[in-house]
Length: 77
Image (cartoon, rainbow, N blue to C red; front, side, top):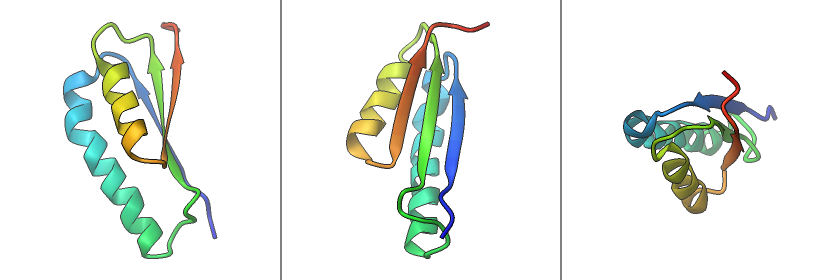
């Protein structure tokens, strides 16, 4: 079965993440439950040095859902 990684780059997306975060979690969970993708599939957020609370929002989701991974890096421009 296919393993799907949804890679989401983020820079100062705090307000948007509060809407799209749950949407992506529900979508990937539904696909896993329907046996369309492997349970190892995940959402990978790449925080590009956000100066708002984007990283905190992402980390909160990652602490609740095992299929969310976080990469934090300094702003790459």
